[in-house]
Structures are given as C-alpha cells and as structure tokens.
Length: 155
Length: 352
Image 1 (cartoon, rainbow over the protein chains, first blue to last red):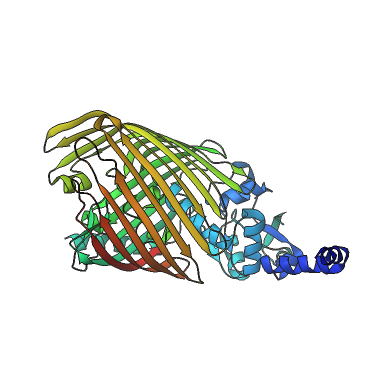
Image 2: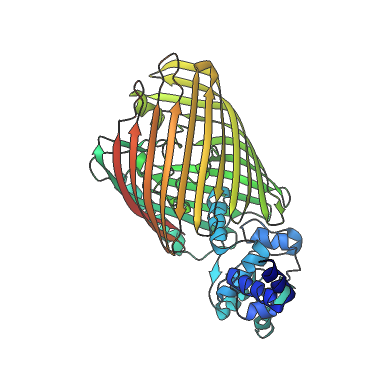
C-alpha cells in the first residue's frame, strides 16, 4: 500500500486523479470557465465597480450600496455552466441552495424578487431598458456583444 | 360570499401580476391549494394558529392559502412592505400579515417598524408559503402557537462573512388577538389574548448546505375567556434551536423548542426531525414531530405526536405538487386534541 501511495505521489498519475476527481465534483464546462465571468450593464449606464460582497447582497434581494449606483440585478440563465460558476464564485452556493435562500429572503424578509433572462439578446434588451441594472456573463461573450459594457471581472 | 372574496383576491393577484413591472415596486406572491381528509379518526388539527381542521369529508379550507406581497422602494434606503393573505381556515378573510417600513441604516443594519410575523419558529415567518418547504404544512405538533404576528419594531444585522451568512434580529412589540381562533376553538368559548412587552432575538448562521437558528422571546400574557379575565401580566418565554443540513441530495431538518409559563406551571417541549432525499424533481420525505406538556397540578397533559410521509414534485422553479400522509397519535387524557387520526392531503404550491 505504501509503495502504491509513494508511486502515486511521485507520478503524474496523482495529479491526473485529482483532476478527474475535481472535474467530477465540479462538472463545469464552456466559455465562462475558459474566459472567466464579468459583471455587465448597459452601455448607457453609470454603474461603477462594486465589491463582491455587494454583488452577493443584491443577488439575495438586498438593496445595493449607494456608491455603486446599481439599481437591480438580473439573473442570466442563458448558459447553465456560467450560471453555476457565478453561484460558486460569487454566491458560494449551489443552485439548490441559492433558490432555497432566495425564496426565504423574499418571503421572510420582504426582499425583492430577481428577474431572469434566458438568452443574450433578451439580456441586452433588458439592460438597455433598465439602465442601471446589472448581470453577469462569460468575458468573451461580453467582449463581442454590442449595447453592453463590462463593469468588472467577477471570476 | 367566502368563495367570492377568495376569487376577488385571486383575480386581483392575476391582474397585478400582468401589469408591467414598476422600477420602484416589486410584486411577489404565493398560493397553496390543498385538499385533504381524515381517513381514520374524527378530526385532525392541521393548522393550529388558524384552527384549520380536517374531518372525514374532503376539504380545501384547512391548508389553502394565497398571499400577495408588495415592496415599494421610496429611495435606496426606505422601503414599505405589505403582505396580504387569505386563508381557507380563516374563511378566506383577507388579513395583513406584514405592513411595515424598512429603513436600511447601512449595508449591514436595517430597522423595521410596523406589523410583522412573529419569528418564534424556523418557519414562522413564511408559514403559509408552502413552496418554501416540502411538507403540506410545517409539522403541526411543533407549530402550535395562538399568536402569529406582532406590532412593533425590529433591528436586523446582516453581515456576510466569506461564504457564511449571518442574521441577528432583535424585536419588540405586542399583539392583541380578539376571539383568538385556536384558543376559542379549544375552550369552546370566545377567548381574547394579548401578548405584551414582547422582547425577542433570533440568530441565524448559514451557508450553502448548513443552517443554524436560535431563538428566544419573553413576554407577558393577558387572557379573557367569555369576558372573564383568567390571566393578567403572566410572564412567559419561548426558546428554540434549529439545525438544517443539505449534504448532496439529502435534506435533514430538525427543530427543538421550549415554552415556559412558570406562574401557571406550564412547561412544553416540542421537537421535529425530518429526512428528505432529492431525486431529480422528486423529494420523498419522512418526519417525526412531538408536542409534550409536563403534567402539572391542574392536570395539563397535552401530548401528541405525528409520523408523516410525503412526496414533493417540483414541476418547475415556481410550482410544486405535494402529497402527504399523517399518522397522528393523541396521548393527552385531560387535554386531548381530537384523538388519534390518519390524514391524507395533497395539493399544489406556487410562488410568483
């Protein structure tokens, strides 16, 4: 047994096993993983960079800090991998945990419900109509999408 | 007339929901349409606070409820929140569960003034929001209070510490309940109840898969039965803890509470333990709950327990179908609660 452990530690096989295990535990694929995720808003907006804690607060329905000029958040569920990465990196939650917490925030503390969009065009239109609202998306998609601007890198 | 009131509220909700969203106003709501009947026994008191009782005929009244919540933001710091609720158990009368002003002092502190739900138990704040839990209703042995609201003030502290969320809620207030639903039913006479000088604290610590909640409240009680004062300035206190775990697909829920009214020699313990397992959109679950009053000099011996089994099917992110079977055992001799019973109930929960 000791020999096997020594072999695993000394070889690339150990790293491979860890990688496989990590990919099973956190099965995330797609653009957002490769390019990272960003906070976006309308190109007309005057929203400024905010702390991750403030982003987390507003996605739980709490009022945003006044210095960020953010009005409301929008959940972007266009790409489930990006959505899950947002929850993992910013909210520290799984989808189940987030939905559970959101319902309680709304009906226990009277927090505002958070609108959802499920495609990029709809998101851009929504942000154009709600100038100081924010959402998240993969950095490479944000770079190639007109009508929005990147406020900050989230992960 | 009752059906008309219910339909009026339902129509109002649908119309309001169809209106374009206003930037300053947020609209949320919920509905639970539940039917049930006692299959073995005489009656089952499913909803203590509103005295919702099933008997051997199918009925929608005991657990059906519909609510509308409106939050109006006056500026970034000031918000008015109102929640109107219509319950079948209360003959579909429309009650205001919430009507309060929230002022956000800074990112972590906020203060509220007005009418709110009394946050004694874990599910007290959202008792009627069936979508938020997998049961038809929170286990009735544990949720036996006659007072569900208070008028007063609260101060909330809500910091975020890394992946942990913390919430500390201090509150103070009172509630006057005329012809209280539960006490009038159990006493078979009109009972007026007042809880005054309420002072309480609720602490919650949570992260994705873990929740801990501790609660304590002290107050004084006045009671009048049939116009005759039976209790005046009686001290009472309530304490409890809840621990909920969500490892992988498991859901493990627990709640232990204690109620004491020393001058009246009343000491009550309640507990619930529940296990669920999420398989895709389905969550089968089992639950054990118990209410036990220590026998006192006046013979008070209320003691009952329920074993439940049920299934929740999450049709989508805002709709769930549920079915549940409750096996209720009534061990009280001097204070029985309708005797042993077996009840089946099923229905749909919606949030919007």
